[in-house]
Length: 119
Image (cartoon, rainbow, N blue to C red; front, side, top):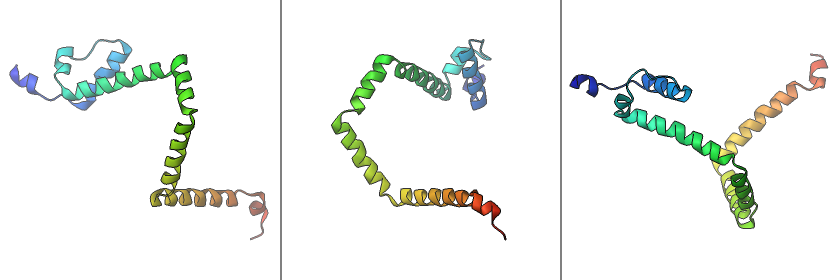
């Protein structure tokens, strides 16, 4: 019996049981056994913490407070400054160039002139 308790619970079993908890169905193993697993606790807390956060963010008073906060001039200035610094990073510049190159190539191929061009 001691060997069974020390046996690690696989991640697939943990995810399956969390899905069963969300659906309100019975678990495949006792909750006490699952709670002994650190992995189960981490995934369970993360899953339900995100759910609670989403519900909280949807409240009208919270939305109004966030909107008011982001309309403040000092917050706007801070975001603008960060965005400028972010756009100056070499990896960001390279990614933007690559995205633009792909976009313009695709647009060039899809123009009506290119479809009727004699080759």
